[in-house]
Image (cartoon, rainbow, N blue to C red; front, side, top):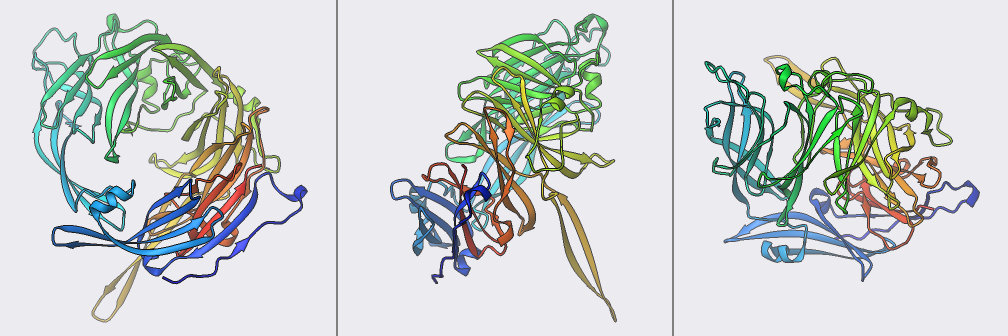
Length: 566
């Protein structure tokens, strides 16, 4: 492989002119054409040797009954100086022992599982499925092809059918969990069971393993369901199920005698993988309609529930939900229904050892009163109760919770037409709002791509150009420094190439003592370098600094940049 000269650029400006985040070191290196055509499959940092090793898969072949992989490696020191490179060819079994990221299970393998859907007329239908996994070395993983097999229509012992509410599939075992309600039975006078909630668990042979009938004094509606994921140690892309968290709200869909007169009387329930209730309590929500977007669990086991609420309105949950969204989130989450609405507040609840520690309500007036922006920013974005896409939940070492997200607009069909300003909600350990941060993005996240088809006639040639517009949210994260401050990393979306987003970094500082935000500094964009989508930042032992990693737009020239945070 060819070696090329490494370009070095060190910023040497007067301290007073430097932003809080300074470019300390920047280097580039050209890789071979084979590596560029291949896939960066692994990036390892050796803490003892203080070196970075980049591994590119360049080919895969089958020799007799063995699979052999060809790859190229590049090694750089802690200051991104080129150390060595090499071209290797090894059997899959050797690579499994050598690289943690190498998850090869053979060229093809098959798994079985279940899925479920609701019939327009009648109950729900369970379907067994066969999933064929095929390895694509250029993608660094497997593609899946699903084939539906036999089906089953589950019923109660009395012969009643079910209506699907929500479900979750265990990718590891093939088990299927279904939350459903009992339907009315034609010709039966007593239909007291109608609307009752049941959790069903089926194994990958479509056999009912266990069942939980939720018992409430009044009829309930699902307000929130989160699956606690449990990654497969042999393949982190496969997510198993360890337990569930449910929040139920009163509903007036049924007779008055089974309607809770207190429409703010919510119920929290925790259920294990064997359909056993382990925690349960009632709590009074400040708003009768609280759209819980997420449950965040700390390493200590404390749970935080966050979401917007329609403060000041007294509708039952089921009526309010018709104009908004119910969420099922977590490792296996998906959106049940969605339409735009405007909220009046945000609620945050903390649960410790199966008991509520606090539940706070923050109104739009409080958000407005605690706005913070970068000093040089002219635009003053804030939260107005509109649609807001949360990107990450971040706990600081002092117990504060910072929620990052982005405003967006929908078109008349309910599709997102554009992403807008970035917001951060900063809550203290007591659940009370400390600040609302607003950042104006440089890019709108709108990517327009075109394809051209050529149609040949007898005497003419016609070119048909198809234009596709896609909208992407700005990836963002927080990094805590040893000084206790949080550093806000934005990955502004510039373009897309070969299906991968081209992003460049911007970074600012949140002062955790006085809840203020610094100006945002941009890196990489001016020189045409973009962050690697899998490894945007690298580990370093250089103290208060962050290392950005990426390449130029063609992907041939690697880019390293070390930035001092303070």
